[in-house]
Image (cartoon, rainbow, N blue to C red):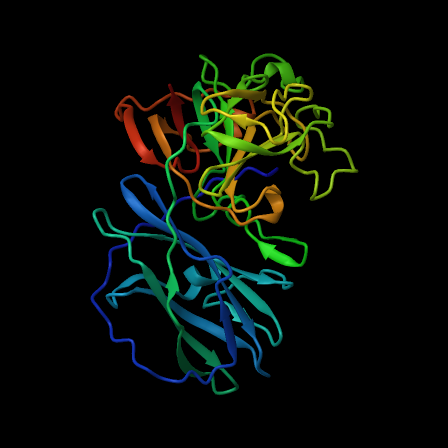
Length: 381
């Protein structure tokens, strides 16, 4: 939730159909996909966001040369190989190295491939995905092909109302292939998850295009601070915590903050379809709802603060499968309507007091039932 990053999405064209031959893979590579591929709609395209866990159960290091994502029509919708595959892979417990080939997973080690697959415009979302791996092992670097069983794709559910109003708002660390939220693997209660897979840190810009005015070390100087947060649907309040003070902007959070309270003051709603919407880093004393209460869509529930593991006022918003933000899997969602004004190219100038200006050559447009992506600048009614 703390670091800020900027990422891009690589859009690919589907390749011709391939035959998924029935064969037995010899390579001692355990493949698991803990969270089903989740379909997200953005920029008129469908994107699948998920992780593939690879564990080497053999006696030789395994180099993953290629990973193909294949739909039920046997069309390759994403092919990742070599350095590009290594860049998408986190080697758990291993020091990242500069590589000129695919990632190598040591004996008894695990690698996690973070996938962000973007379908061409107009392509129907598949119901299932297969995965094909080309793996090299042993002293002779013999190659083996491994094809896994299909996994079912899950959708984004019913669109929700925006969690904030007005704007402009920057979708800091929103969904992308490389955002800090996307790559945050959290282990709690014995389970590794990606809770913030689709999370957004909403930061408001003032009329001057800046994130703050005056002294940036004062919370009141930030345009986001004190802004209202609203229920995204008619829902039941599942969790409330309101006991943490605001941090001074850019200061290190208090030492006693750990993973269970990193969210700061928080409200979590249980939506009618069983998903949970989390609002974190709220202003102390501003929460107006109680656990068990039923709220209506658009109801003011609290105000933005700077509590918990955060360096500047913003609203951390995400949807997941549980009430505890960091002990749940992040789920996709779409917002019913917003105005897309533009996109921030880099956050560092804004954090240093610089101003953002929209690109006059790219007029704003209304977006219906999509998810905002990383660093988009939007306005809500």
